[in-house]
Image (tube, rainbow, N blue to C red):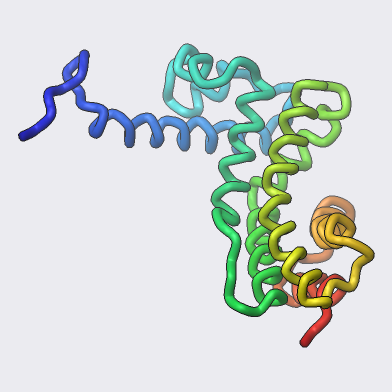
Length: 197
């Protein structure tokens, strides 16, 4: 038997995908504007206009501009590495995780990250939300580095240092050099933190 529609004439089964789609459109518009105008000049009104939604639609989801930006960036991070790879080869697992991140950084996501670094130093809410997003995503890489440690193949002093070295190499190359983030570079990063069999 077909379930009765909820109030407003739509069932939850119909409404939920539309909510997800709206979130994705808002997040995409936020990243585009962040890349175009930066955090300081980004406004909720501009995001709403570009996303084709009303401002109340955004305010129902996010209490502030900082929360909106954090959600837009977190969506990319979650999609980049949604789960921990387990191929049986810890170096291959690490290479897959870091290559996925490098590809994301080479898109407007990387530009958006660059645009919030300076404002985050002055905006405590943005700093806190960004730190939480990065910390949460480190757990995936930590799992792989712990496997390397268990196999006595970790070249860094400890797991956290290995994570810092791997992520730091990618972000430093993107933010401060004109060099490309390609698979060869990612391979060299893995070589620097995990020894071969």
